[in-house]
Length: 350
Image 1 (cartoon, rainbow, N blue to C red):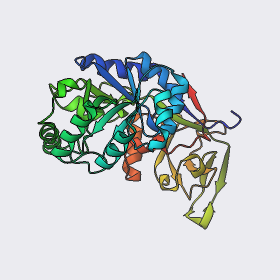
Image 2: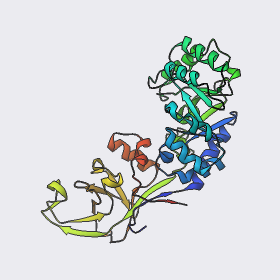
Image 3: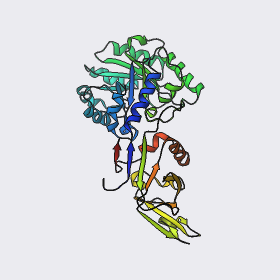
Image 4: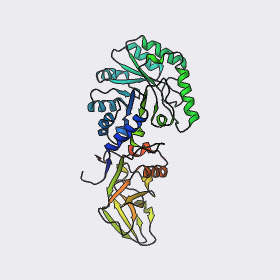
């Protein structure tokens, strides 16, 4: 690491967060660690910690991600949420990748192939309107045909799309129950609906024996306020310019009308620290300082005072409270923030 800009990830805090959640919600048999997008941007090195903390199934978005995870752990089951082209079935079977069936056309093509040793989960659309079977007769047909095939119907699940709204969430539970009315859920090994926020905010459904842990592993979207911050984004001051009645950076977007000290920090939008961060704040020596001017591809500007020196550490993301300040400024969500930090920024694990 030759540029002192990096993300610091605290594995012990991730483990502690997961253990707290599992200990509180200890009446499930299957705890899916959702490790898509390289563990929400923190890096696949986190996977071992997620397993050690108690997750006994992993979930990803694509076959490419699944195969990356399989290189890390040869044995743990892995569910792929996305649709996998059927021409890659042999790769899924060979690598013990569980696939998702989310529409009838896909199911019928799969039944023609009738592969052995393939595990599948049925995805039900209960309101997200992204992927999933939406009609009761579709679910009944899928269940019956799969039970009479060589394919292993291991699981069935849905996705809560607005867990902050109790009415919407309860409608989704009701929809799931309606869609599965004509099938025997007890004959399906794993039934999972809740993930992170719905897991901690709503009672467990009696027919569910699995749950999914995503953003909650990193202490975010935590209504209990018992979980910890698990990462920081850091850099350092590489130069301080004293300017007066001048502009700063591209397009002269920031202009001083008096003498000011402007610190230059070696991080920019090529690192995923996008231009919209301008006018938000970083921390230097535990004090807040404002980002000014247009953020460059590789560097940015911060208005500082005389207490700040070259080589002082800069916390661009300090903790979860700071994350919520940043995402409010960016008009985004906590999920997106770490995912946008590119691989050019090293992850340092502690």
